[in-house]
Image (tube, each protein chain N blue to C red):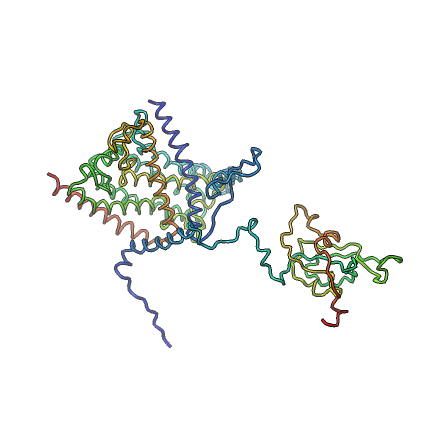
Length: 176
Length: 375
């Protein structure tokens, strides 16, 4: 169906143009005044103001490793996260837990666990795939460094960021 | 005599106009930000950390160190000269861009200070002088556009030349009613007349309280509007920034320029704004005069203020002048962030078909009013 677009002729006031300029300037002055009175809502001033308190539960920040209640590394170096990692940011060097140690029956642990934070895309697949729930995405997002080497998080750094995670692993937990 | 001229030139250029230019750029960024509900540059302080202090000095709203940082950035950037350019003219254009600074020599920026007239070159045709010098400003853009040997700058240069010629006419025509009523071409006399007999747009004292002056307000109002519009067009400000027009011509005549050469165009544009504003102030808004404040020789104004030392009065007059200029500059910025750009043919139509004709008719109207009301 044909629809005629209405094209109203300009009124004399609009043709004169100057009144329109003045009304336009009134609008911009309104914005200016609101800003001067501090009523305008502006962007968060980042380093001074932060949004950390409002970060949602599901926020995906830096991936970290956690220990359990008995101070045991949860990671058993199965390398699933290394294989699933889309940008291949994770590198694990596994080792056997030598006989006579406290957690000898776990058999395997990572000798070195490296996450290249330049590569990491914070997708959270490592957390999803981990059968032992050893790797978690925490809420740290300001990962900075001045060398490439600094941006590779090693095992020590990962445990430092991750800390302790208490409770049973899902696979042994009948409730989950 | 020479020493005074040099002192005045140094004062105006280095102590007033150049800082004013750089802080106009800052004001432009802050005001535009406020108009668009943003924050704008509010971080750069004065780098007192370089002198061993703990923190940078943050004054007022913050970000006042921005112009200094910008200048340092412009100086340190690579000054790149593209291969195909016409070198001599490519270098000449940015130098010409700063030429509007010269026309400030004719502008009376104060009454008197220590008995010396506060105008660098007080010649009897200073109005013509200003128009002659600002007319050269177009060459900077045309030469830049041509020397860049690239299509967008070339288009920008062409647009600029046609636009400037169109608006130079209405600018010159619109000022004639004022000159007719004042009967002089010397800017310092025009301002003195306004101080004695009421501003062109505010005839409230002296001979200003007559039927003639009040009738003349009509042509003066028209003159003021046309002159202001022409100043916008001459300084390539929005809504008349045809030569630059970022969205169509990349950035017009200075596309190929970088570093300090670009900065000179940039500064030249803002200097032209200051010159334009000071012309408006001189012709329409009473120059250095403020009602109630005596001039540098202690004439006029309130009796109590006449007791003050004369040099203080002189400085107050200078401050009044630049205060008015600053207020106009804010208006420039305000208009820029309100209006979109005209289409090029609309600009030409407005200049040639409306402003020029209205200015011509305005001259006749003024002549008629003067002829019929003077005894």
